[in-house]
Length: 195
Image 1 (spheres, rainbow, N blue to C red):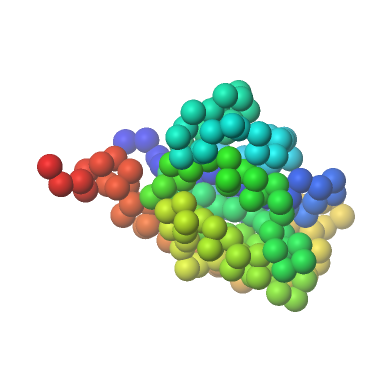
Image 2: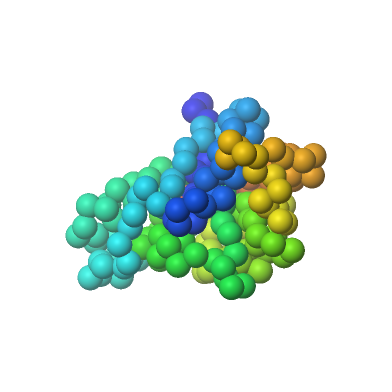
């Protein structure tokens, strides 16, 4: 049986973003754990325009190739880890746009959050995100990675030098993503539907 697919979504799109090295560290950790096929969706590279589809996403009647490509990528994923900063108590507009582009593709899949920022470590952004993702029937896991004063963990070469707390939190969240993904799989396959 193939491994389930974990897609790591990098939410920040701004030049010099800390999200890229943080996502690289987390992706490496997830790959070494070995429970997922890990893929990265970098919103800076994907560069979705702000919602320009004429039909509601729930209809899946996409007219633009960028939306069709994004749909296929999310549809093919079994779990998500969103790497996000906190901007003014919230999360990046590019992330909201990427989420809102789709509807059914997100359903019945677990999501974990790797957040970073100052003293609050991005946790206020994550609290807002949980309201959004549950509306799309994504299932947030309790475990998370919250990195306060994140700049101290990025060295001169732009690589993350994590501490034990970060590594332990990442491992705990990955284990929970595996557990919840397995529990939700019957919902995605239709096995749980009564005849």
